[in-house]
Image (cartoon, rainbow over all chains, first blue to last red):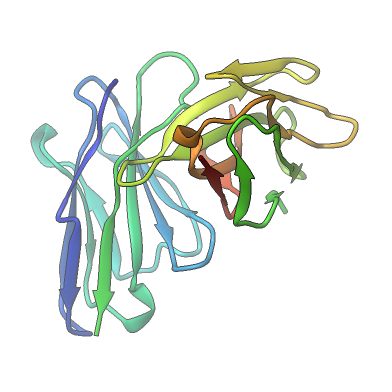
Length: 115
Length: 114
């Protein structure tokens, strides 16, 4: 079936540094999402993105976070600067232009460790 | 607020036994919630197992079933006879046609013994 890819699978950085998480969504999908899962907790919605704009974001989507998808390339989540509490697994998802847009296709996640 | 509560894991069953993973939801801001079960197999990404968008309907896939019960606000996942390959983490989830997001439960880790 359709696959969402995430690069890298693991990332370790020092607190205060910038990090960019990359997502390669399913090719004909138009809606993109990021979720965050802290170890032992549930996966929580961060943001969704459509037509070059953030449509909705949660309280977890701090000012240090930003998303973009320049020229149809990777859909990225940038954190600048990072904080210790940003350590988590980040999941990207995408959904198609028709049908139930809540039927999202997920990537395997990027494990971010902030030291 | 909107939330999903499901069976805490891990759940361990033997092959060919029956399975039920409980899920209840609260949809205070969503008038017509859509309900989902997602599954994550070891080393793979999250994938949709089944979905039901109408109360009273049943969804099924790969031998799993779940019925959307609006009265009890439940969406329990059941399978009559599990297989070792069903070992995975199962997530109950809630979505809305008016909100571009999905609210997940904490996940239930299922171990099926051979």
